[in-house]
Length: 225
Image 1: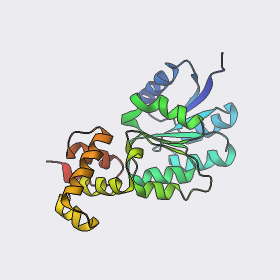
Image 2: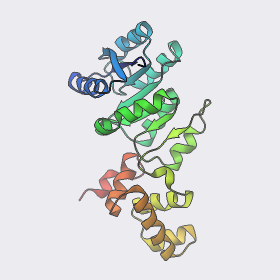
Image 3: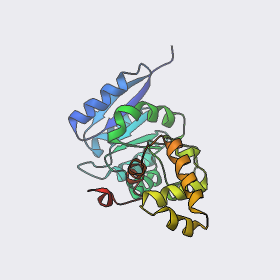
Image 4: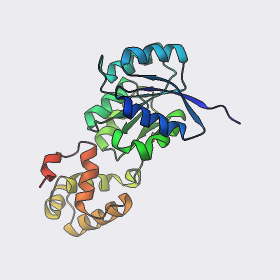
């Protein structure tokens, strides 16, 4: 039997930390070998325990998770880091990867995606739990040590043109304006939109917008009624 992968959790909320631990240890391939409620404790445990992976929150009480990631990369560069955060804006995501994270998971997706994120990150892939914009892809491509990006929810099946149409539709542009902007016909826009919604398994423009909200493509306030 293969040896269990050893995981360190750095999260300041005890109840949420316990929930993460429960999810991880429900899979026989993994075990939680340490827990920390702040960055200082987390860094000490990382140096002492040498885990196979660290799950790190961005919002910590002593220093930011970004600084912790940089410190861990400095002292323990061989430990992959999966960020688990309540923030899902593009700037946070890109900043985490630039600091040295290998994966980024929104806390709201933890119950469904945590194990998958751990799997991909341990394999050496970049992982994200949601659709990612072309802006994020371009910024990730600038990282010095590029790795494959694990994309879920169908975004990787969209063509470049479909990605453009998705962003414009999500921001509320009508088909005619999208057509004028992209120099295509309104009918072609409608066809693109139908394919996008089928690939992402969404049933309405509102659902499509919610995908975009998660990665900071649009302002959530625009969709509050």
